[in-house]
Length: 271
Image (tube, rainbow, N blue to C red; front, side, top):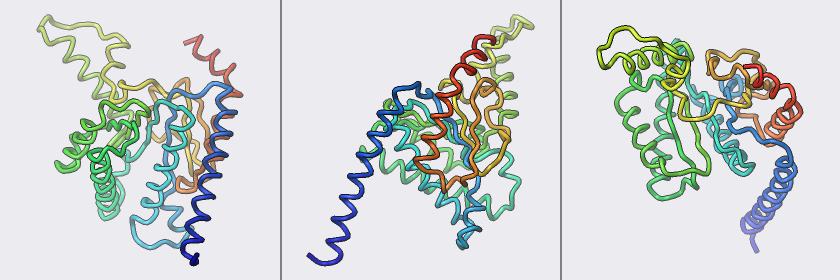
C-alpha cells in the first residue's frame, strides 16, 4: 500500500469515527428541546481573511461558504427543521464596489453550483428559499435564485432561508405596502390593518420565527436582521468568526437554548 492509499484509508476511518461521535452527541442533545428555526448572523469573513493573511477580496467569504456547508449538515443531523442565514444585508451594498461585486459574483457561483446539485439529485432533501428585496439583484442572479427555489420546493428534510439584499426596515415597508394592496384591492376605501396582515407579507413569513439567533464575530447587535421576528428569540453571541464556527460552537448554543427554556417560555406566554 502506497502513502496516498494509506492517507485515503486513514481519512475514511477518521471520518467514520467523527460521524459516529456526532451521532452520539446529537442523540444526547435531542433529550432536550431542539430549536425549530436557528438563524445565523454570519459575521467575520473579512477579519478571518486578515487573521490568516489570505489574499483576494473573496478569500474570507470562500472560507465562509465552507462553514455554511458543515453547519447545515450538522443542523440536518440534529433534526433542526429550519435554518435562516443572513447572507447579504442591504447595508452591505454600501461597501466598496469592488468588494460588493466580488461577493455577489461568488454568491452567484455558489447558487449556480447548487442548481447543478439539485438537477443531479444531490440536495439530500434540502430546500432553499431566498428572502429579501430580490428585485434589487441583477437579472442573472434573480433568475438563478428562482430556478433553485423551484428545483428544491418539494424537499422537506431541511428548509434553508437565505436572506439576500435584506434588512428588517425594508421588509417592514414591503410588508405594509403589500398588506395595504391586498386589503384595498376591491376599492372599498380605507381599511384597518391587523398585525397578522403585516406578518403574512413579511419576506420570511414562509418559515417559523427563529427560536435561536447565533451571531459570530463577537457582535452584540442584530444588524437590522429579523428584528421584528426575534423579539422573543434567544440571542447567542460567540467570539468565533464565521469561518471558525464549528460543531462545538453549535452544540454549546443549543445547550444554552435548552437551559434558558423556562425564561423563553415565560416571555412567549406574556406576548
